[in-house]
Amino acid sequence: QINAAWTLHLGWQINELQSMNIYDLIHPDDKKITDKVREKLNNQDKVLTFTNRYRTKNNEYRIIRWSSIAFKDIDLVFSSGRDETERYEAEQELKQMWDRLDIALKVGVIGLWDIDVKKDTLTLNSHLTELLRLDSNIIENISTVWEKYVHEDDYKSSFTALVKLLRNKNETYTDEYRAKMPDGKYRWFFSRGKIVETDFEGRPLHIAGSLMDITEQKEAESKRLELELKMQQAQKLES
Image (cartoon, rainbow, N blue to C red; front, side, top):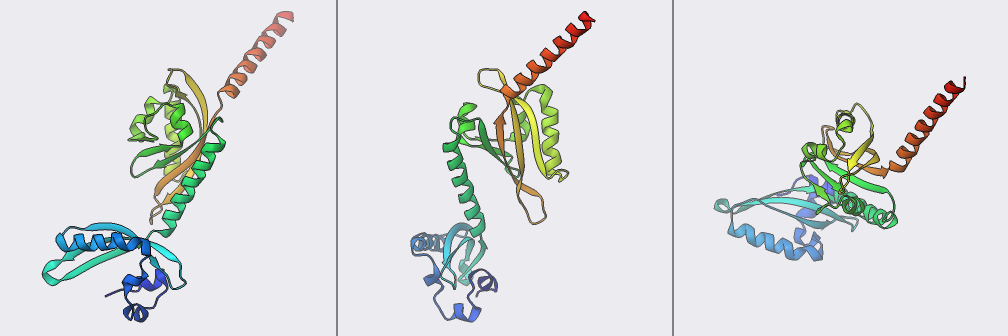
């Protein structure tokens, strides 16, 4: 038995699907893994999750993620599928973008980051990973460990800026803070980001953004203010 979702996502009418072998719609490269899943379903009663591609009526392929379970006592397999084509394509596009920028910015000062709100992880591009000398480009439990990377005087404002974004009080996230480097010294960074994925209820799932090293700008600004102060003091002495 099949439902109307097949028509919605693949374009085939239910009567057309009922008159054909659904197996013929599976991408040739995915038939092997599909056969393996079917074999496993026959030997266990646990839910199995897998992904394969199905041919649409206009001869394109959609990526479907399945959760299947076999009820051996009534000789029935129940499967529910979710179309993840757009999600997969977006992930591939993001990965390609990161790869291209990594090459272009290898010797630059810009980094890219992505926060998975649900998993509470921060993913960095390779340039930032190398800059911070991290063993992995993914930082776990970012909401709790972020404090050890940010200067104590900047942590509160930095955390507040992100919370405002998560609570939809701001459309974008911008922040300036000092981050601790592996040598123990601090450098100034300007970070900008926005929510790039939400769930069905509008709650943030992913936040992505960029990071720029502004240490030299901050130091130049500090020297300028120091010089202006000295000039003002000199003028007072002259008067």
